[in-house]
Length: 187
Image (cartoon, rainbow, N blue to C red; front, side, top):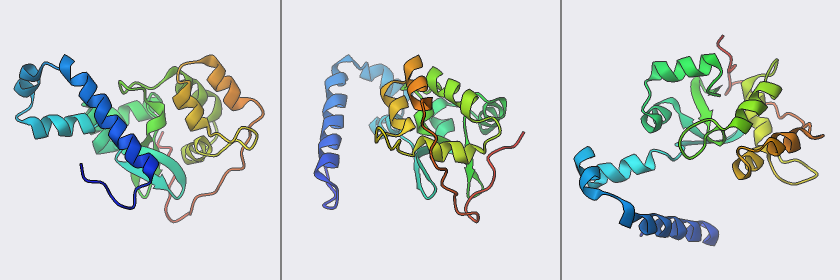
């Protein structure tokens, strides 16, 4: 495996751990069926990697996101189905540089929006721009040092995760560069 000499030791260790975790699961994979589904091993590997977010936005800081096309490939949805879910409020998206992005923190390993995230969106987004909420998710709580996004990842389906996030933590909202961002609402 090629290693970028500029990667941190922790990142290299994480990459090795990921490869080891995949290798440990290979004995349970029905390769005959998998190769009937995909034309070759490269296509199989590409499909496996589609679950990874394809965009990371640092300015404004909203973290790892899926672009619409990447989310569609992962969840096997059309652009129209993704738009419909976003408009219905069952999928959270923000518009950055005239394209919709979907923060990865909202999804579980199966691509479903977690209950805790849905509750948090319902409580925190009315009257607030979606981008403002997305920035808040990546803003560290000064008393705990952790972000709401990290808490949601570590405790994705617990009521206490939502309660802890909302308990006295009202971050200062960082205003994104006006030229780079347009409103995330389209209702």
